[in-house]
Image (cartoon, rainbow, N blue to C red; front, side, top):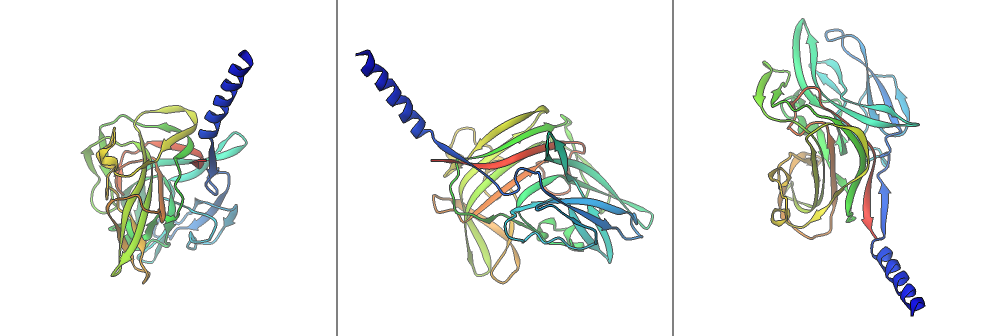
Length: 318
């Protein structure tokens, strides 16, 4: 009897393992150990200095002032760092960089109020450090200040159905209730608000009609980090919630449809807004993944917040 009982327990344990089996699939370059170092010579009417900025990707060093090609196959990442050419002047901006972690590196993303000096005029721009799945099209033109999303294509083709996003992270988040909006044009505006770091991922089913791009939301993974996390949290998981999340427990308004501005190139190569029109259980066509030290739209946030991330992966149920 005892023998049969032990066999039964062993069988149940194995069945439990079978049904809880999973696979963790690292996102290419998600270990944050490989970076491209770029040296951008700013115009003499600005700083005149050589500024160092970084991109995630195969290790390389670029010593010329040139646009970076984020469309190379095999590397899904883009970053908030950018080379801009405005009124014939070269400018570099960097809020994301590698930082040593043990024997490798992690990604450090800072919220910064950056000062640009041009012709003895100080211009201030609020920028959040960000990494994301998608493309940035450089050099950023003059209109990039008025429409920053005109040069950012959010999301890449993707057809799988993961169970969660996994990453290591730590954070420095100020509890200030004041945020700033600084676009480089006009004065810095201070407003009431609480900034925080955030990680979100969407699975979308996209299609194009008459040059416009539409999408249904297949799944949502979202987490905001409101407080300091001084020590590394390893293998942290943010589950994907499939279907209409508005009917699910703990739904937050900022997780809903069209709460962020996403643009993508249509068949003609024009950048157009991706319009989410509902929830569905269709086959995903695109993955959107954004990791940022701030949660507000471009040029708005709190100076001083920092988010560190490492080992970004997707988890699948087997």
